[in-house]
Length: 163
Image 1 (cartoon, rainbow, N blue to C red):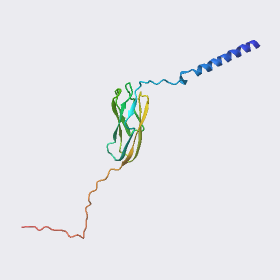
Image 2: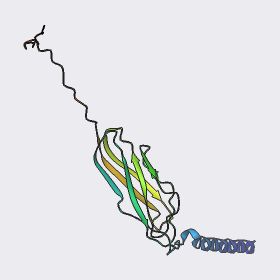
Image 3: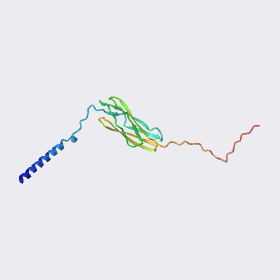
Image 4: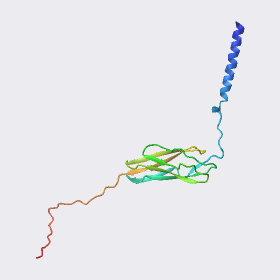
């Protein structure tokens, strides 16, 4: 019986050692290799400041970018931080050295501060870039109409009637 326990113990130890070694060499622990020819996305700016904008005004701005890599750049659907910010982007691959724009339209119906983001995902070396818009929406100026006065102390003017 002691021989069976010894053999069983050895088998368990060997099994455990192989199991630990197998876990150490799994692909998840290895560093992924970057493609040296991968596209690169370079933006002229990543922040657009509207400053002060009037309620109901056009809230569209553009973020120009260039593919500075060596392979075509493909953009995935940009994600905005809320429904009031709508991005549009090129659907076709952007060739190396070429430029294009991502348009962002902010709905300016609500008064107050603007601080929104659009996350752009692509096949570039830097696969995620966050674009920001900021500013302040102020109320539309109201048109003032001169009020009609009913001043009874003033002397009415009369126009003579000619015969």
